[in-house]
Image (cartoon, rainbow, N blue to C red):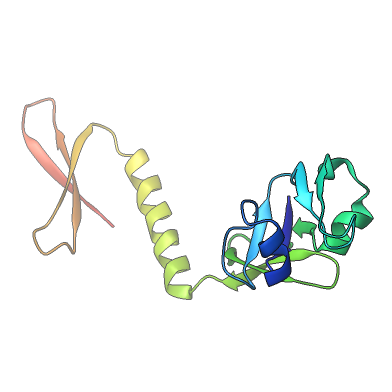
Length: 148
């Protein structure tokens, strides 16, 4: 994946390719096949632009998008890219502790539910504070099990 910072000059030459606000970082799955470069043939349309040397692409501002290493249990990638000398990279943000705790509780509840035999439905109390598993015994009686 490649990205480029939209400049006024590039946008005026390539309005169909560079849609977005000036200063916005636009990502591309592939380098455009046709592009008017500021450095290669000085603003004239180049067909086969994607086949040119990477040095031409970088001179125009196209650089690789790199995914940084992060701990997926504690962090996640932000949607925001920033330019870092010779590449674009995603911001890494810490997941709030409350969200980590809520996910751990959900996993524990799901594991508990998987190990219950005979439960055919789950119900939550009207105030939303408790959840119960509902099952029918061999004698036809309904019983409930509080999900911790």
